[in-house]
Image 1 (cartoon, rainbow, N blue to C red):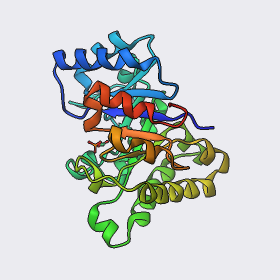
Image 2: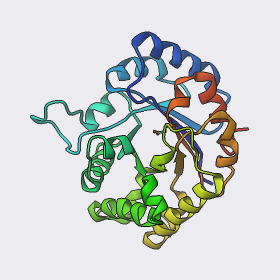
Image 3: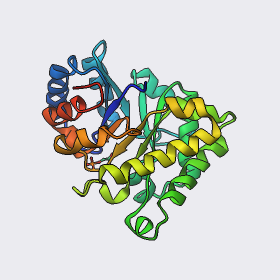
Image 4: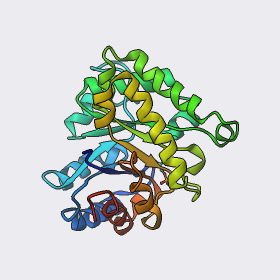
Length: 254
Ligand code: PGA
């Protein structure tokens, strides 16, 4: 049985005051949620997040990480070890905003995945197609290519199981246009099938989250699908009540 995970991606939103309020709101309801919940905060707030969430039922993480481990002259970068130093459990890698706004390649994302694992973090690897790719029938090809880049770097294919995968169709992110449960399940099943050919045991245990305009009103039907093991939540994770409602909709979280 895969334990569901609902992770919030706060993106570049917030202030010290709003982060404090959001953390208090999430903490107030988190104890009652049997699934796992996590928040991925902007780097500058991680110290506050750690202070507030340490010892609670809520895990935390960052939204990106340097592709290199150790220390070095890499101005502006933040290493996996630094994130561990702030108690992070998770880090998002390959979010579509990093891939499409900042031009991160499949290879760079794969290096970030490997660096996160080497630092003891759990990477949340985002994959997903653009609208024109879906319309051209290329969804599986795109997801395959994004996964292949990670497998190419891993010495042991089972190491993919040290992360979490998030299927996020780019056309559904921040648009209010969610994939239907069937559309999402189809891609999730494809991803799990793809992993099964590499390593069956890992494929069965690996959590595959759905992301893209998940809200309290549509979470339950998405999370009820066989291969959807929770969600990566953007906009709706900035409201504590909405985030908690989504978290309660995860399987076993009723
Ligand atoms: P959204 O974002 O929930 O606001 O669509 C999801 C994400 O970008 O991870």
